[in-house]
Length: 453
Image 1: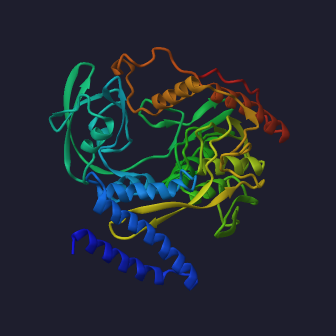
Image 2: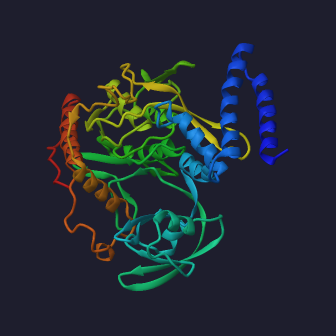
Image 3: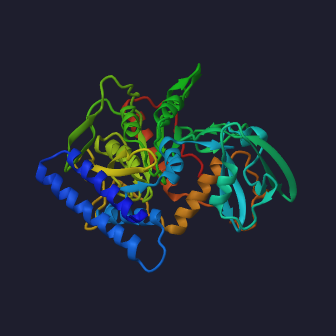
């Protein structure tokens, strides 16, 4: 008996056992077994008769991709075992490395910023530094993904980066750590690299940018707003209005989005979910949650705001808690279940339900959709070039120890502008004035703050 036929027989036996363990009627199990048997037979015929050698692992991967592709849902995906570590990193917001954000600019690996508190930050690596070697090995013309793999590694292990800083080569030997990515940012860095959250002092308007919703986002936001460890938050510093920036936010964990909304509303529906095999679930603002006192609020979104970011923006809008400005959001409102398929078999991330805003609006954009996502009350259109400029401005604001003189010559020489932020700031000044007048609490003239980029 050939090795291929033996493998086929074993597969058939295992599938038969599996079929009788599946839930449902005997007829359903028989249908499922018949369907799987066809796949197994095709696989056997390819192994035994196909003209050229085949990669069995690739056959499996393509068979899975073909099945999932028929669902017309780009968010239901299979994660093979060799991509599990990267998937876990994205899911949890942590990874093992030296804590740097990189970009390939003109073929050079430029440090956009060290991550606050990470090994690179503590060692003094700056935004604008260019990595030229990793452990003595030149990375010239190396794809950025390969560079990231070289720099990453087990916690505690050393790695030496050779940095070009304005023509001067410097070696930094760092020890990798578990890196926790921050998700709540301010507007700009102070001289001590801490965040400046206020974009106007009179009136006192704060700005928070949320980059994604991971397991730490709610705690980070609450700490910034209310303070911790004896340090006062923005509320105790006299904040009169808040701009929450969710542009370019791809989403994340639904429960974190729900907890963030709970910070700002006392009652009402936050989001509901249901699907063909998932009964409707309605999440409401909880009486036990900590709700902040009222203040005017604007949420900035664009066509890259997705998933949990859309829930936060849409719920605050539908509950009349915040104005939404910018562009219509992406339209990704999927409840997904992460299913471990077995030891060394990979992971299935599958859509099991859709999200609906308090108004009943479906967040997800389908092929024939005309309405999806969150539609801002105040639309500020920006084209692709404008979005790139805004993204670049955010990178500059995020950067630790940013030195324009060290950046590659391919960087734009003119400062980018952000018309969506400017509109939000102008609108917020008006909201604060109205709120102050409504409560007869204005004790001095409120001036429009100076224009900022």
